[in-house]
Image 1 (cartoon, rainbow, N blue to C red):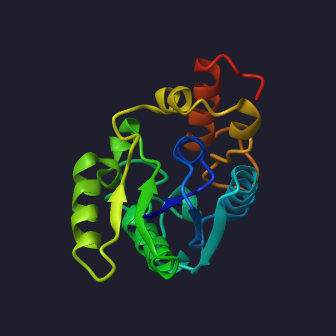
Image 2 (image 1 turned 90 degrees about the vertical axis):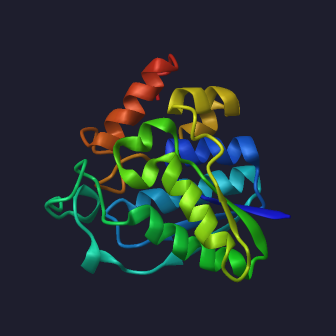
Length: 198
């Protein structure tokens, strides 16, 4: 069975790609401010790992909110970067492309600490898997690192820092701003790994 990964270019998806080595990687540019950086990171990592890389571009800025859209957070936002139904949206867009490639399983780089928002929790991925798998194509959605935090995932993957350093975690720009929640997580993870030189 062919496998694909939703490769945002962030630390979690990059480490998961190195660990799992799927056949295809899908990066979605849905209008997020960080799209250019994410695409650069994902393309570089996919090239290093010899994974076929696909890009899906659909401008969804009209429905975005929060840091990633450059807009005030929605009233329902649990965290500042929350974009309404973001994981559901990008899973749908990537999965539609994955079916063209005959992919039977789409991996997602969600980790335990993503549970600050409902679409990062185990029950979301269980329901997403049930929903996608019952539709034409029978595509499965899996999150192999969901019981780990980012540090545990990086260690489990044994990814070299020369590849992990390509990851792009910033939520608001094509290059690291150094202050958003994504950049803060990146810095804290590298420090916990003893690599605050990256």
